[in-house]
Amino acid sequence: MSDAIKHECGISLIRLLKPLEYYKEKYGSAFYGVNKMYLMMEKQHNRGQDGAGFASIKLDMNPGERYMSRVRSSQQQPIQDIFKQINDRINTAIIEDPDLKNDVARQKKEIPYIGELLLGHVRYGTFGKNSIESVHPFLRQNNWMHRNLIVAGNFNMTNVDELFGNLIALGQHPKEMADTITVMEKIGHFLDDAVAKLYKQIKKEGFNKREASPLIAERLNVAKVLRKAAKNWDGGYAMGGLLGHGDAFLLRDPAGIRPSYYYKDDEIVVVASERPVIQTVFNVRYDDIKELDPGNAIVIKKNGKVSFEEILQPTERKACSFERIYFSRGSDKEIYQERKMLGKLVFPEILKAIDDDLSHSVFSYIPNTAETSFLGMVREAQNYLNNKKEAQILALGPNITKEELHKILDVRPRIEKVAIKDAKLRTFITQDSSRDDLVAHVYDISYGSVNPEDNLVIIDDSIVRGTTLKRSILRMLDRLNPKKIIVVSSAPQIRYPDCYGIDMAKLEDFVAFKAALALHKENDTEYHIKDIYEKCLRQVNSKDTDVVNYVKELYEPFSPETISKKIGELLSPKDIGAKVEIIYQTIENLHKACPKNLGDWYFTGDYPTPGGNRVVNRAFINFYEGKNERAY
Image (cartoon, rainbow, N blue to C red; front, side, top):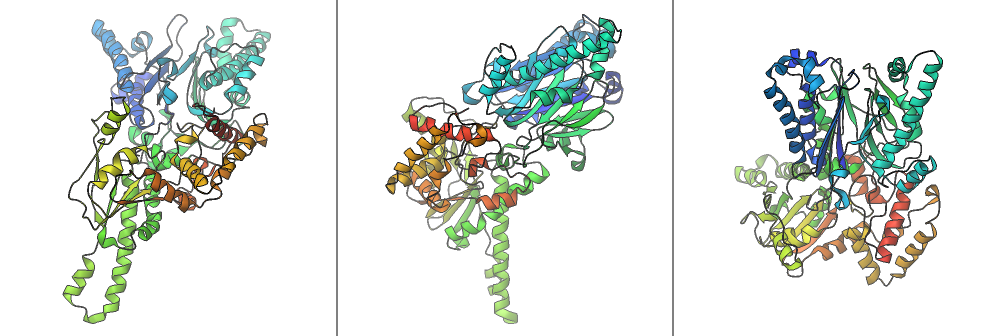
């Protein structure tokens, strides 16, 4: 994607179902779980490169022995940093005492991070928050083993204020109004309550305090705790947690907005944000990895029993389509096919833009994630030409000459690697004029790949802000002197903010929003902007369930094609020689390509939770009032 968009995070959860000695004997190392966690986090680094964290729990430790470990980093390469710290601790311990090397029992007792229960997390620092305090997993400590809680999530809540107020009403004093802290404290409150009630009940049965501990672990109903905690959550989430005594869970939101996949056998239970991560790291078949149902939690008890519990009633499935277009790894079997389909389905609009002149059109892509949709686009161009060739050959009949046949067969889509991203270039100068000059060189071009009479068709995953297109890519492509530059977005126009985990919070950042404003100005209908603002204001104190997304009215007077044309005008540098045209995917074709992921609120404004409508209206109010702040 040419516009850098940050995504919240990726989660990895591993539960080893056998004693550590089993993995030492079978795989040659008691550090099997740690090694697998490293691989899982690295394979999900596409989901977050600003911070990483790891936590582990050792089962059945004696009082006074350390059973929980956590390490976090917000360094430049955070995954490598935390595992370097872990490896240094392990290696130092073994160097100081070589007898530890083959003594698994002592390794577990004396070396941190080695355990049966592991939780990993990677994240991007959204809204400039990238301090170590913002890095997951979060830890809620208590001297009661069962009340220790470690939480990490891929999520964003739209109603943090309400949840914060609920905690205060419960008598708590949260240290900050962040959704991670708020969610953890909500789970922690009901965990404390459940443990206290169980202890009271077990004490009545005649057991002493020490005898009560294993019975609490056995009887604790994790699903019940989660049902109480998540009752008022509004957002998209995949929430993972470890309890000090050894229970674990991962909960998915009722609309299935954020992804979660799991695999289990007799050795291991593993949960991750992406399917191919599990498939690659554990070398298992695609069909053996399952998707966690929306509104459900996978609960792993200390004794290794795995259950799937409905925590919240599932709503209409609205799994995030941006996961498929851009964020998730393209190595997933389904995602690979979906991205190719996105390229295929947009081809008819490309054909119109080039006036059916494939002979004078060069096809390329903006590196690197648009490559798969490019393959789909080119394959459809090949299919189109094959059908055309077939008709031409049949029309010429049996008397076709060899020269005529070759003339027809030699026509094929012209494919070039036009744009090359200079990965080492960093725009470190902050002065606007100097920075713009550097930004213009983030991409390089393949000179001589395009002729002056050619159309240049270049596909991108999506066009969000269009800043890089205007400042860099279009200027670079224009140096090739094409007749026309057609920039194709495999995604529809992004018109509305996300509030469920993607860092797209401000309306005025979107080039589609700017285009709609410009069109209202041209048509002397700017009064609609104030009307929308006043309608949004009137809903500020309404219940979320009653709020209507009035921002939709901004776009209603204009067709998608009209807005796309205006976007092309806005993004064209004044001194560019080629004509620029922008083509966006349609909503209908997006749904055809990604039939299982119909979450399209950033394109349509149809938010899957009530809090979404409140957020988009607040974003419009902020825009109108000139407030440069997030709406949630």
